[in-house]
Image (cartoon, rainbow, N blue to C red; front, side, top):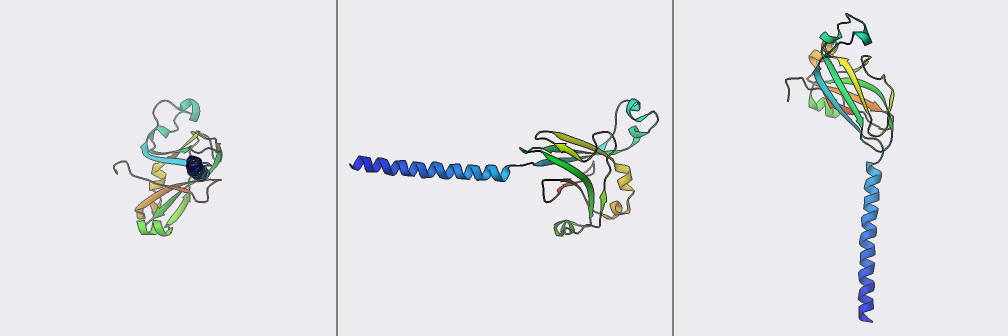
Length: 169
């Protein structure tokens, strides 16, 4: 009889441990579920090659410094990338407080698909923006911290990615 009681206790503990582990696993799956945008900002890009068949000859795009933005949906459900904006901050404290000098809506060049765009899990959107036009903005000259934001329809807050100059690490 004592062996049967010990076996029952071991089975009860085993059930409690595996049940709790399963509950934790399901909780983490729920928290990590949905879309997750991974965003990269790559400044200092230039077009290489002949794009005259797409944009017409003599468009001058190959001379423009460009900023490339890659947004990848690494989650398990689709999302729609709605817009890309740029935020200018005087300091990191202003960034933490959410008080930018200004915000600008960014219109991507017609190199890739236009926004808004639906991204299924694993899909990527690439947008190109003129770096020289941004540098001419007065806010660009004042701000010490410049962030691109990518907004999608599933997230409450936009994804901030710092613009690092090509010579910055």
